[in-house]
Image (cartoon, rainbow, N blue to C red; front, top):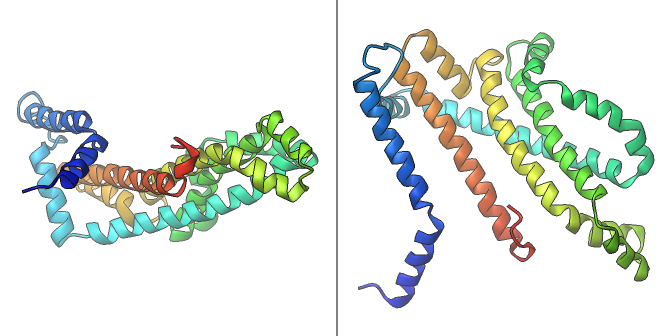
Length: 264
């Protein structure tokens, strides 16, 4: 029998699970299965839900899915970590120091306005079809959300907080670490989350056109081999990867910053 504490834990777990959302996903899977077997049956490029699940199983057990998943995940996370470090290191002085803002923001606005996809061709031209191309693309594109989140969060710190720092005669360093950074933390967290999403997306795009490895390359090969079930299977796995990494990030942030309210 379950004790009261076990029942309470189960209740908390059920409240955290988005049961209506899961129900909608299950409904969409059933609808897709029905459509693929009826109206979509005459399309050779459409795979049913059951075929996609079988393809995922086959790719995982006897195919290259595990290695490809590990490659895409590692590139996305490493690229995200590098981009996050660069974005914070670059954004911090620009947000804190007025001359740095004055002389760099025009260049930053131009560079970040370039569509991310257009940079893929330049990266392939410079580095060829290689893992270096993929990493450069991921780092460059994922850099901008955190950089803009960092300097934007710093520059929008309420003036009342800075007045408090001056009232307590805090040093410049103490003001930055005790006042400015905590106030800018929500913007930095949002930048980190957006960068993570972009790192996954651009890793897949780079694998499609610039690096013969990973989930993106697997999807392209399935498409060229006219294997719709495999192509849809890769699409589902990419979606699960993005959802999973985002869920881990949100969980980690909420555990680390329990006293900061709803940051994410």
